[in-house]
Image 1 (spheres, rainbow, N blue to C red):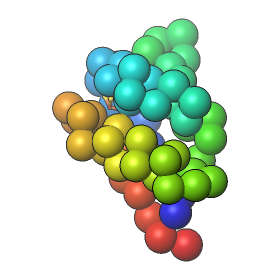
Image 2: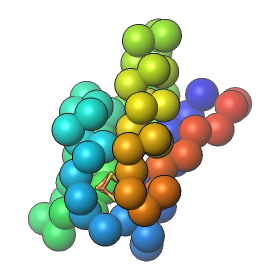
Image 3: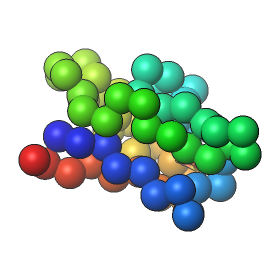
Image 4: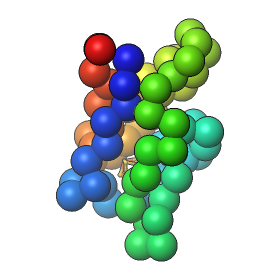
Length: 65
Ligand code: SF4
């Protein structure tokens, strides 16, 4: 699994960082940055899936590799 974030649709709300601060960060403009793109266990995968569900602009997706 890999986390993909679309910066061009991110509105900088920060819910992803609040939900999963080990995987997401925001740049100086508040735009999402993925700092750990590949979850390493089931707990991290669950947090990434939660981040997908809370993002108000649907800017986060998960792909299977
Ligand atoms: S939750 Fe979505 S809109 Fe908010 S900062 Fe994260 S990616 Fe951007």
